[in-house]
Length: 202
Ligand code: GRF
Image (tube, rainbow, N blue to C red; front, top):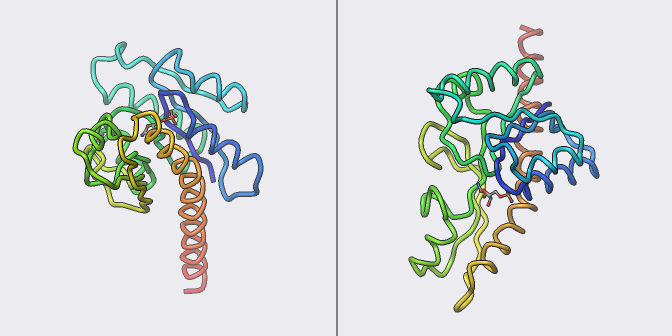
């Protein structure tokens, strides 16, 4: 099963995924990195793991549908089955959602539906909640609104700094994301095999 990771930041989640893929025998491989920020640090990480990249600059397009069309073409050429968003700071439009229905997942550093959107860590600290966490969810047209797949919570320390909280959330992300991707894909593959078998015997 082929996965494309979409990321535009430092790529620590991308790196955690790659480390896992290289160390263990999993049901998927990372066959492409899609990045909307030429020069992003995640691109160096893709080079390190020799993952092909598709980089584009959204400013060079008039409409989201135009660059999403290009992405879809690239994904189809490479026979990508699943899309994993790891710091791709952009809503996914219908051009990309339709052909990848129920095959796009995202990781977000809060317990959704609390603190969707940008700076979830800052929002949690500003609100003064005592517990926050990480959510992995399916992607729909909304901002961090898709069906929740998994969550892990964490207690915020007294007077905890933003850096500390961010770092503790990231270490949850790095452990949880590869694990959930593996279990989603392996159960989806089994379901597919079961349906095929049923079809061929009926
Ligand atoms: C992560 O915190 C993820 O939850 C959010 O974007 C961040 C990406 O960080 N969606 P990195 O580039 O993987 O370090």
